[in-house]
Amino acid sequence: MTFELFLFYLFAAVTLGSAIAVVTVRNPIYAALFLILAFFTSAATWVLLEAEFLGVVLVLVYVGAVMVLFLFVIMMLDIQIDTLKEGFIRYLPVGLLVAVAVATEMILVMKSDVFNKVAIPDPAPLSVSNTETLGEVLYTEYVFPFEVAAVILVVAIIAAIVLTLRRREGVKKQDPSKQVRVRRDDRVRLVKMKAEKRS
Amino acid sequence: METLTTFLNSFLPEGLTTLIIILLKIIAILLPLILAVAYTTFAERKIIGYMQVRMGPNRVGPKGWLQPIADTVKLMFKEIISPTKASTVVFIIAPMLALAPALAVWSIIPFWDGGVLADVNAGLLLVLAITSLDVFGVILAGWASNSKYAILSSLRVGAQVVAYEIAMGFALVGVLMAAGSLNLTEIVRAQEGGITNWFVWPLIGLFLVYFISGVAETNRAPFDVAEGESEIVAGFHVEYSGMAFALFFLAEYAMMILISTLTALLFWGGWLSPFGHALDNVPVLGTILGDGFHWLFIKALFFLFCYLWFRATFPRYRYDQIMRLGWKVLIPVTLVWIFGEGVAIALGWKPWL
Image 1 (cartoon, rainbow over the protein chains, first blue to last red):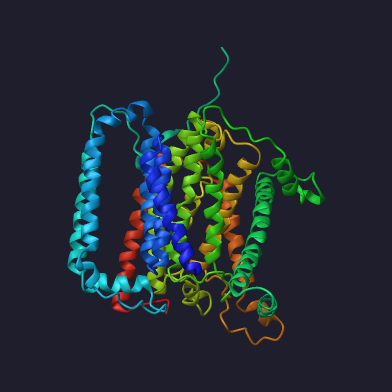
Image 2: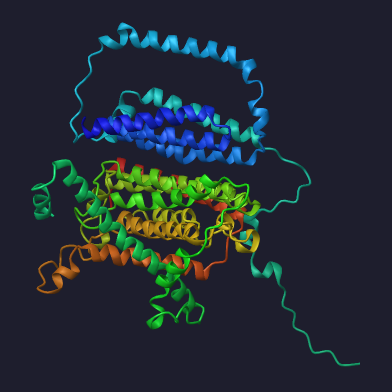
């Protein structure tokens, strides 16, 4: 067994184990932590596949930003662990049905000729930079879909901001730019006066 | 290095030799780093002391030079108390999660031309990715402490770090556009040719944004609302004691040194000499005035000094002002700068070439 193969099995085992733990542990914070571990190890697997750009971006976007916000929300909610576990038996048949359906579909797709007919291309030489190649393809061949995706994302951002934006009348709010602009003359007035005589 | 490899190869298998060599290199990087962290704490107390017209620590050893060692010994022998009804596992893991990324990034930092442990193609991205993991230590510490102050602090840190990471990333986009590479060694090489060729001049706005976000990212004054002792006692590490507490400090200072080094590498030419190659042939001074690790060291030291200087100078930002600065000032500045830089590159003006 080569070292690379050993690493692959190690990362794959950790990914599977933590993915199972995500759905089985009781504490939602632990579930989020296991999800982070699963992301991290799958990023490591991608790096083994020489897709270092995708691996790094997975860590950067999902682990570094999305999961931070996830943890944020979970920590702020007061989650009752007992009520979460209620109704396990009741939902079990539906869950099993979905699981079996997904599993059969995946097995059928994987077993089909579509996957087996494609010849595996030779790996690119190590000197080719992953990031550069991806960028080149993205900005030449796929530039239109890429920009459409960008526009959709901007719409989503604006929608999210508009949904949470609410203005209320009569709220005493600070305006930092006003506060920053304040000069001494606005606040302090120096008055010259003669000393008063003691009566 | 060559002789060591052949010596080890004579009685060990190939793979093991590589492993041992890599481990030795890691130790060679981390030991000086830990020592630097210890003496940064000392420098901080001394420098801020002198800025405030007092002596700073001067009791342990000559002029107080053994103070960090005394501190370490004290912290090592203190009891680690874990709070009741808190998650002990996460409580113990959190400080390690804070420290590990801060140390891991050093594997891709080039110290001189070719003096790097792992010469990664996507080095700059990797730096961003690993430093973004640093926030988990703080967030989890806050949650695992089962304390209101700690969790308030970790919520503050989470929002702050996510906000400033964006500005930081955009500042780095400007650097990689100018250098045309993500590899840190290549980025420094692109700045070759004396002080006028360093990226700080065409990218001065991005440099300022990067350093400000770097200060915010490490939760240092004036952005240290995470610890705001007047409001939330000590923030996320209020329940920590002994070595677990010390790990947070190690992480914070290692990150400070890292941000200073990265600023020197990305904007100030790293190990390059400000004189370029003009003085390389001067008899004795040539080696000192030429490129070398000492230039990187001096530059990084200057930025580290700036960290301490800021702490002694600026009052702490209010929380909403931090958010305003991050989202409404720094990010628009970087966007405009990147746009201008893109136009300049497209039109072929490259003042730095």
